[in-house]
Structure formats: C-alpha cells, structure tokens
Length: 535
Image 1 (spheres, helix red, strand yellow):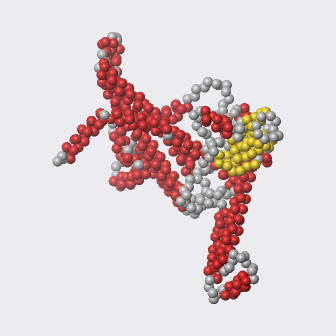
Image 2 (image 1 turned 135 degrees about the vertical axis):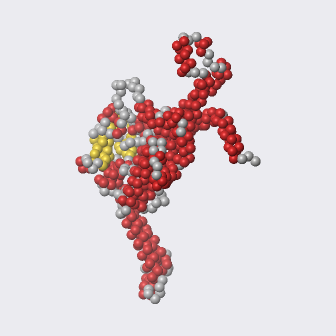
Image 3 (image 1 turned 180 degrees about the vertical axis):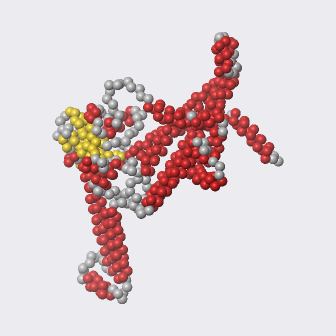
C-alpha cells in the first residue's frame, strides 16, 4: 500500500512527463479554439446590432450590456491574436526541433564571421538548444496567458450580468415609482463601491490582502469571497497566482494593459487612404450632413442593401432612420420605412404626452406590472369590477327569501317573451348579461387601443416629415406599423405616389425630430437626404 508521499511523488512524475508532452494538447486546443473564435464573430455582431436596434433611452441595463459587448469584441481580438501567435511560434518550435535532428547545434566557426560578430552571436543567440528552450517557454507562457485572460474577461462578464440582475430586481421593487427608491440607489452605490474596492485589489496584485489586522481581514475576506463567487474567479485563481509568483510570467501580466490598448485602440485605427478626393461618407446617416445629397449609401435602400449582402461578405447593418424600397423607382407607388428608434420614446412620452404600452428597459416576463398605459389599465380594472358585480348579483338572487320579488318579475318577463329565445332560466339570463358585458368592455378596450395606435402613428409622422424635391409628402403617406426584415427594426412602412414625379433624379428628405429639453420647443431636428431615380 503506497503512502501519501509516494502517491504524491508518482503524481509529480506523471505531471513532469505530461508537461513535456503538453505541446500536442496546446496545438490541438489552439486549433479548435481558433476555429470557434472565428465562427463566433457573427454572434458578437448580432448582439451588437441587436442592442443597437433595441436600445431604450436612459436604460442602465442596456448601457452596461453595450460595455460588455465591447469588452467581448476586444476579448475576441485578443484571443484570436494570442492563439494565432501561439500556433505560429509552436510551429516554429517544431521546425527548430526538426532542424536540430538534421544539423545539431550551431557551429559558429563554420560561418566564418569576424571575431566581433562571432562573439556577439554566441553571447546573444547562444546554443540552438537554448533557443528551442526559450521558444518552449514563450509558447507555454502565451498559451497559459491566453486562457488566463479568457477567464478574467469571463469573470467580468459574470459580474456585469449579476449587477444587471441585481439592479433589475431592485428597480422592480424599489423603482422610480416607489416611495422607497432611495433603497435601490443606496444598494447600487454600495455594491459598486465594494466592486471597485475588489477591482483595485486585483490590479495591484493583492494590495488590500497584504494589510494586517484580524478584524479587517475577516471583513474584507467576506467581501472578497462574495465577489469571488459571483465572478467564478475561484476557478482560475491557482493559475493566476502561479502566473504571478514568477518574475518571467509576472512581466507578461503587467504587459497586459499596453498590449490590450495596442490591439483594441491603436492598430484598428490605422487608415490606408487611396482616394483622398473622395467625399467622407463616415456618419452620413447621422443627419445634418448635406454631402448625403450627392452620395448613394446602400444601407438607405432595401434593394441595394440586399444586393450588397448577396455579393459580398459585408456585415448587415441596422437601419438608422429611414430606408427607401428602391434606388431606381419604376412603379406608380413606392415605399419607405421610417424606423421607430429608442430615442423616439422620449419624444412620444414627453412632447406628445403618450404613455407607452409597457415599461422601457430590461425586464423579465415572470415579473408582472410591466404595463404602463393608465387608460387601458383602468378599462381592464372597470371590466373586472363590472363582471365581479354580476357574479355578486347572481349570488344574491340564489337566496330565495331575499329575491322573490326579482324572480317573480323575471318569470313574468320571460313568459311575455321579453327575453331572447336562448334564455330559459336565471342561469341563462346572467350568462347572457355576463357575455354582453364582456363583449361591450372588450369593444371599449379595443377602441381605446386603436385610438392610441392612431395617436402614436400621427405623432411619429409629425416627428418624421417627408419631402421630395422640397415638396411635403407627409400627408400623402399611407402607413402601417411594421417590423423590417433587415434586423427586425420596428417602425412605419409607408407608401407614397410617384405619378406626379418627372422621370429623372429626385431627392427625398427626412426631417427627423427628437426630444431635447434644452432646444426650442423641446425638439431638435436632424436632416437626412436620400437621392433616387424615377424611370
């Protein structure tokens, strides 16, 4: 029977042997990881555009989620670059081992360099075995460093997700409409302060863990364990501390910040300009840019957008404000899509006084109370009260001693043919009254909903004025609410006549109004131009 020490020695020997063969696993994992990371690009793009399309105004949750998405995009670039470097260097290492089998060590004497360069290369390059050892150390460090960064990014994502859920629960119970809103503010502030405290400890390599004091250590230990649990940092902590206790790998950890800045901010912002006289098309769809009169931007037209996507690997982009059905119009009618963006909700509620159907921001279907339309809520409440009153009335009628007079009157009316033929007793009578009341209240609710839909549509058209060659076409638009198939953007699909347009080039102009409390009449206007041709 082996004792504990012998078992440990055997395990250590196994690890030593496995360590020498680890390059095979590194290459295998790096290859699969490179493939997976490359394939996940479209998913990250989808999430980014999803948040761009579904972006509530003043929503802390979506703002934080945008930060997470940007962090994940940066992480994607870092992981792809690291693993690519690792595969290349590991390939170089394998090539060096193969060359060593053929030619052995470096013989500087056969190279017949001068004494200066011979001594220089012996000192700087050294032996070939030393070179292979250095490559091995670099490859293994990069591989471990890559997955350490992966888990650090993952911890950050888990922290953000937890904070979003925590804030959503607080806002549900202690939101802006609650008299206890201060509880939500204080809880979020305390949570953020403690998280910042732990983050400073992390980037300083345990500054606060080095402070002596039993009471302090217990308090900070509890805080540290809590954040360790929600970020799952306990999974990779042995890897982190083993990485930091060696001077060679600790330098790589300190290199992380400039390395991340180089990959995410410096390198992607290099621009190769081949046509300096071509107009700058960056940000044309943001409005108030009269260059757009003279530029065809494919994302402003449904047909050109789909044609570009069909013949290239370009990423699908969201519709910013408006999309015309065709660049070349040949029919007597044409269509355009006016997007209803998150920023429009502020205009509808504050400028036009139209409350939303539901609460804005991140929510969960399990949480009730998301409906905010007071008119519809009141009608639903009145409907419930009216139906409940009928149930109470039927219950009272069942009491013979108290309602004999009512029953006698009902029997006389029934015999006289006053009621519908489907009513033959009191149960039929109250069922008829209940169904009639439900139908009447449903009609009231539906009328209120339709009235609100028309009110929203009118407000959106007033906030998005359409002109063609300077002539207003807003009153000519026939619009319905529509979810555009491009990226499920919500808005209005509108048709307008083109019979009166001459054959040739025309200019469609959108005057898009947004809410701005500091602007005149609380509204500011942006101008978007879209040229098109009539044939």
